[in-house]
Image (cartoon, rainbow, N blue to C red):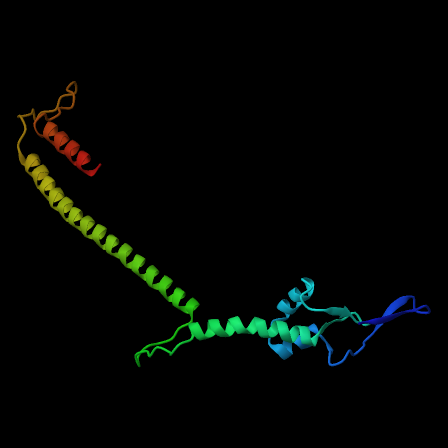
Length: 193
């Protein structure tokens, strides 16, 4: 089908196109554009020897148009069937419906999930704040009670002491309210820790 000759002065083989009857050759890109078949499919057919092909002198590859037409008819028939099965009457949507791309919808759902999670964290924080406020109120009341008890203990008179200081006398400590004060102080320390 292809007539080639050696061009001795150029040192390479030159392919000359020959037209056999109604058979015509065309580039794979042109065949793809003409038939609507993806060029990757045309290349695969050529690699699998499902269509006849040849190399031209300028480095291009041409395929036989009649082979491409036969393959393209068989290629498009199942696609037409699939489209007709998947495409039916369009469902009617309510007038207030909004059509969104899938990635926008996913982004929207992620944002809603984040908002929900933030709301749950906020509710937990409010609950903890309410508990802390209740505990602070209780501690303020308890502190006021302890202060009033401390004042009351300070007012209780201790044992009589000597009013005349002497040089050899040592400082006198009051045994009365001190042990109670220490117990009260220990109680407060335990409460705060």
